[in-house]
Length: 396
Image (cartoon, rainbow, N blue to C red):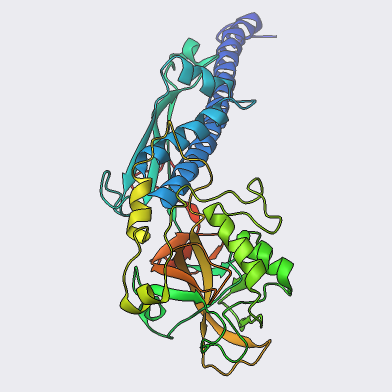
């Protein structure tokens, strides 16, 4: 056998270094893939923690308008997530000071302009999280840092609401706020002897999910919600005839820390600020604002320190109610066309004696639970707190 340009052994010797080089390249790619996969996992963990922090802060901001309280709530939630199993890397980075969480507040979503007023949207962000690297430094890659951001704020107006008091308001179709204006005092529940806009025998109480009777009215007035209403179909408001004064008073007054009829503070905590004064028919007729009105109430939340929050629960005096197109023709247990939903501030304690009237002031919006409508521009009425894509980055 004749060999040209070298021997068989020379060709075999050339293959070995080529194989070694190829093996090194393959191992390097595998090592890089492992580190990048780990970085992606840590990025997901960071994003989940940021999402939870932004939602927590935005919820408190929505309830109180207090950015200090909101930021404190966001930090607490973030720290709780960092302590969860699987987040040891995040926890270690926070512990050594290399992971810093920053909150910003904006009046608008897009553009998101930090420190604008009134604050509605929250951004929780981390400039960089240095992910642990195992193999890539050997190949010259020694900086796997991932940023993260999350934005949360109020949703568009809800088309389905699930946490209502068992009571309705009468509104004007096709008018802004159904004809109401912010701070306007209304009789949310009328007493006997008062002409009803709903119809004979109706005092603005409603029936939720087939519930009926005093016990159901009392629980729903206190805050136990078992039903939803939606404006996206042919759903109507089912009226609950009768005054049912005693049970309704016992339920609604828990929001001011007044407990009767077996109601318990452990089940229904009072509002952070339950102060009130008697509000009378004379005040109502003269449109005289009570001392503890909606403006006072909202101002109190600005004074709360994260280190010493009041006892109770924020926002209990804000009532979410359906709005109906009332024509006075409902008779007994009947139905009224559902126009949408509204928010009212509970002005004072409801007295079980005399006219047994409940007064409230209209509020443009309020936090609730349910399903947002399709209008991305938002609007008045109840909303939920949800996550948004950060308009300024792809890191959310």
